Image (cartoon, rainbow, N blue to C red; front, top):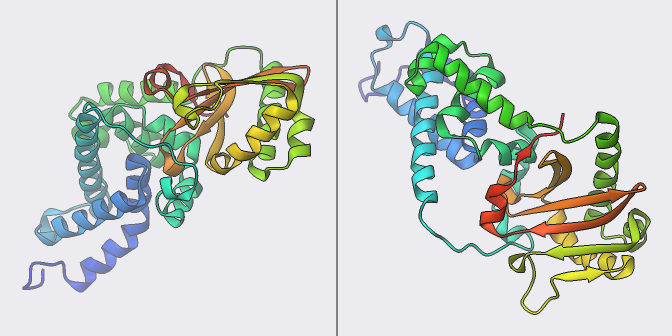
Length: 294
């Protein structure tokens, strides 16, 4: 240990060798690159206040410390969410945070998984990420979440079920539905009117919650051309979209920076989008069962 309270050079080098893994753990737990960096930095500071002779297994010690920091942050976040807040719905990058940060998150975790993880309880999320993401044994997870190894295993299992969800239909039908939804999202991102018309049924209907639309816009739009023109405008948000299971059926999540803002429930018939509903009301969003597609 150096005289200023920070780890000596050899220990610092060992910490740096673990930094990337620790950052990945924290990113999956917190869904935020910035918060993950802060959690890893806090672990470095705590290491500087610890006698190295007391750390028999540095990687395991660091994983435990970072996980406990993340768990505390997740619990604090859960308390804040109980306080009412009005958030403007972003139309573009301004609502998405730092584009580089979002790109890192999406690349390392996946947009749909970030949304689903965000719906887990703090202890569930920590147990699931550590075990399923980084193969940490339940004996090590148990003291982090304050449970027995058996209870920690149940936490991870419950989280896994929520992440995977339950498909509402035979695989063949859902696969076809998914292809149509993916084609629709791709066309919306590109803003190409002809591509949108090719995937929309002639009598398609779009419905939306008031919070999803500018003031004065009709909550219902009918007909392929009308809906396609509207969707080209929606394309600014489609860049933040990901296909996921919505109540057991493929739909679209709009989640800038991994934070859910809209869900599109998409109806498919004869290989075309027969209609879609834009859900933006927070109470309705909370009531939807969301899961990651395999």
